[in-house]
Image 1 (cartoon, one colour):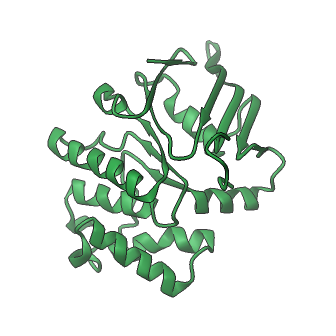
Image 2 (tube, rainbow, N blue to C red; image 1 turned 180 degrees about the vertical axis):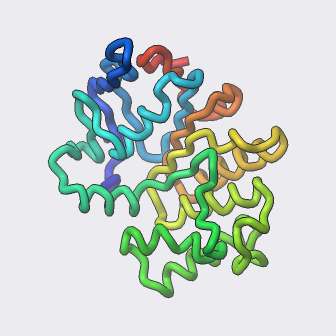
Length: 232
């Protein structure tokens, strides 16, 4: 997956439709949506609450299936792949950062970072530990390697979540409202860290945010409104 020339999208959605049955009838969340994300690209997606941003991300990352349309990774349709193979490719090639950090509270920072390695089966133990140590040092958290997440501030926990997202050398980082739970100053620091890490690691970044100034810092910007994705 993603070992591809820059001219070929690493992920593409083709004529995606998705809706849900509600008591008042069927509600269309995504309407004939098409989108391409290229290697080392940075794209901002904005939209109001309920616009379908999370559904869009879930379909793009193959966490949810569309009602119709096609999802392609590196030019290949994912719809015929066995679920186990799909999960392994996702774990090894896509890093996720969410609004809530989703760190495992019983594990220290080093163990939290090693989780993606274990899920993907991609890193040997020694390689994984070396990578985790490097990322914690890069983010200024090396002295907290054996601390539990609850002992950290919200901004520090989100930095750990960012380190975890980069753990497997992914080609794509998906960041879903990564500053939504942070104050303005801390949110700016987290956003800058994401941008710096994207440049250093040469990944693509897909940022979903309601904060338009952050979205406009990406190379391309779109707005999701009434199930339609339109350039800003």
